[in-house]
Length: 227
Image (cartoon, rainbow, N blue to C red; front, side, top):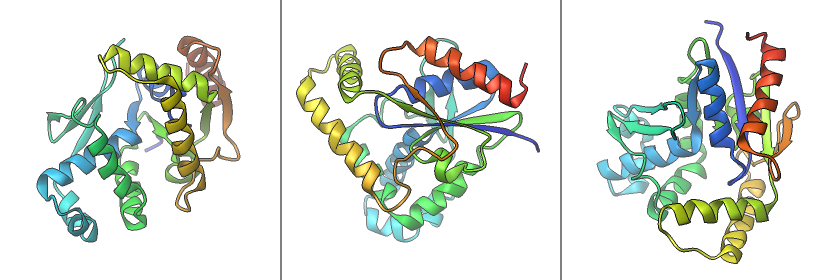
């Protein structure tokens, strides 16, 4: 197997999921959204056993029959399926985010999930987005992107997403939440949010998703010799 791996890391609201999926779709590569993977796994585990401490103490057993897959169609957001069931909307709650955070700070769980995430490496290639894809999970990747954007722009994007979902929100509060999340991600001892040494950094603050994609795909085609 000679699969090519491309990673797209960055904080919340920089558009890494959108760009990663556009790249995967363009190249015909498999797509991995690590954030949604954590959330989907957390929810499925909770459905199986609400004693999460017990689950985390024997994660290998509780994960043994869980299969998570990502599917996408042109011009649409990716969908997450767990054992064939659509989890796309179910995982977008604060409760699920809290459960996922328990897995994210558990070293043994992260180590096990790293092996799980690496099972997504398939021919002809994989595009993975997250916070430690290029630094930890797929450190051997030949192409690594790290997306950034101002916190104000990221909060505006999140506000528009919430409005589209019919949810009211306050821009100032969203900015504060993003700053707190950034601090937690960057200062955690396990796989902190930092660009890989060989990452290509793209600031998405004032450019469209199409412009980011065009920049990224040009770099990919030049470096991976993909026609």
